[in-house]
Length: 501
Picture 1 (cartoon, helix red, strand yellow):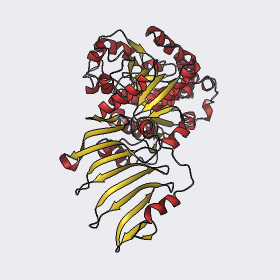
Picture 2 (picture 1 turned 30 degrees about the horizontal axis):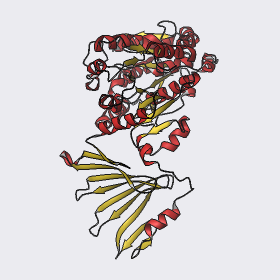
Picture 3 (picture 1 turned 180 degrees about the vertical axis):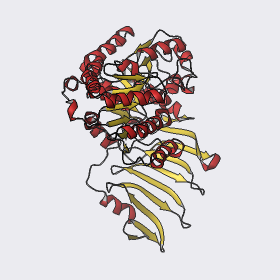
Picture 4 (picture 1 turned 135 degrees about the vertical axis):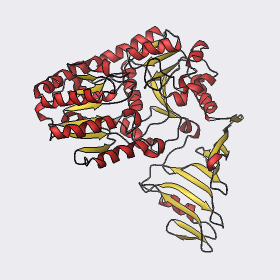
């Protein structure tokens, strides 16, 4: 079995999890079993798996140990009544009172299901909060007098405590995880932190599978546990972004990647997978290994490559950017350029698709929105949020623009070209130069050069025939990433590493 490891699948699905699903389809076509492995608790697991088509293909750490049945009843009214109607309590709505003071409150989620239940003491402090997942009691949190969590205990299908997380008070009133206990038939196992717990979980999967191969798609949840595993199985790290903090070949490594060279030498890691040939070469040099492979993180379906998308049906002047609102995407470059373009091209309009990055209390997204407001550009620069299916967006736009500082692959460029949408991108590490046939399907602009970005977009918006020519060649450029071509790269990797295939 091949195990693709990430933190969790979200409704706002990131490119990494989409890449895992596409990889699964490739492995399915080769007749090889694969599963996605997640290590974080996921409240939306049912909705996400239905949306992504991954039902029964995901192994979650908590579900693995809890084995909850999950109730699919229409509502939890009977369960709510059972929780609230206790001896000596008066019930009004979703609250139970004792001597006029609230003692139990049932809280519902947006679907009307029980989310959590608060148990309050005589002074009004919440001592315990029980969480429910699809009608099942899944875990409880216990609090001290400063409202910090001191313990979280997860239950199995019989209601027995299976996993316990212990916390102690830390700086700024933030609880610090100090111990994890796992209750098993033969006794209790203890872990000092989650990396130890994850390593044990991976070992459990490996012990029960003689052909286990583990592929980490999230270094922050798998790389350190790989080093702590006791069962020896093939382990690989996939780079979905640049390996250095500035995306440059000789830049400073991200801290999480610093142990890789020693892990490769010690047999705790067998190889590396990058999305582009350039990054695979750079990784080989930085980590001193020959086991560095270039495999695109996605593919384009044949039916999409053959789809006819007439250029004259596109919205004149429509520009798009598909990027989360984070500093590394440098969307301010694009916004400022569009503001200048508007003076010469009245029809120009920019739509930005991507979720707000939470880093530093949404500092970047707030700054970008203020930039638009200050320039009275809200009528033609729009923040459209996350959208799962961008088919109509790609097929309506005349140009997609990427202004990132660095990328791991720049999947949005490939998606745009697969829909015959011309693309303009800074020539950065990594991805754009591999994806774009420069001057044929799109245009590469010197990295960070705002003047060149303006001139390039101005030229294209002023030259309908050139823009149409880029559109006509976009799908041919995208065909480098056909299902057959990417599958071949995986086959070459499996053969080179002598893995089951």
